Image (cartoon, rainbow, N blue to C red; front, side, top):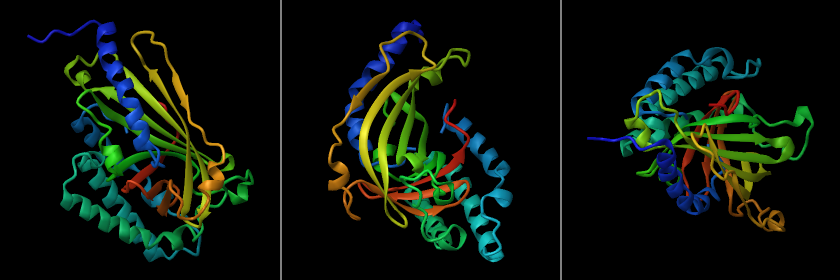
Length: 291
């Protein structure tokens, strides 16, 4: 017979191992510029995002309506984005993807990337370090991950906890990229839905700079662990700052460690490739990171 432990005991069991995993997670996140979903169960997630892929206003707002955009290119881009969202929803953001599925998604991404310059323009990394509106970047905003092939992100899910949502908040005027990861305990799936879900949020602060028309460099600054929607009071948040003095000069070259390349971006879809340990990330723009 399965017995549900008291809230305090359950929460301690969940968060203590998460803290032990924090520093290994930080190392994985160091080169992650995106980190960019809410998930209570695989079936609920897929259903929600299948609906999103249908209701998402792709035809009206995803591509800039400037006259310079070829209608044929616009139509092809919209169709590809629908295919991408449908495939991402069907395979749980990449967590359940097979090699064949990943290869199929890579084909969609490669074709969509070929339209990037026509839709957005060649230089998508402008605006970093300036508050001038006319120099702002299409990267600005809150992005929620819908697909990844990056091992460091796929391995965040453990037997103890699983990934609820991953965001990246980019503000080019402040040269800031905040990666947000929400974790929930796997035991929650065995509990009645009326019981509150304890959620641990990891905030990873990075400094973002332009290294080229489509390349954004990153310097890892800090990580903060904070329980949200918690069931008991715990001594959080915990924040760890990392020495970053002189790193901007050391890591300012085009091929210096820590960067991502933009494959495609428009008003509500962002596709990037990280350098190390590799992998792509597909995100959609959302209003905020509220749960």
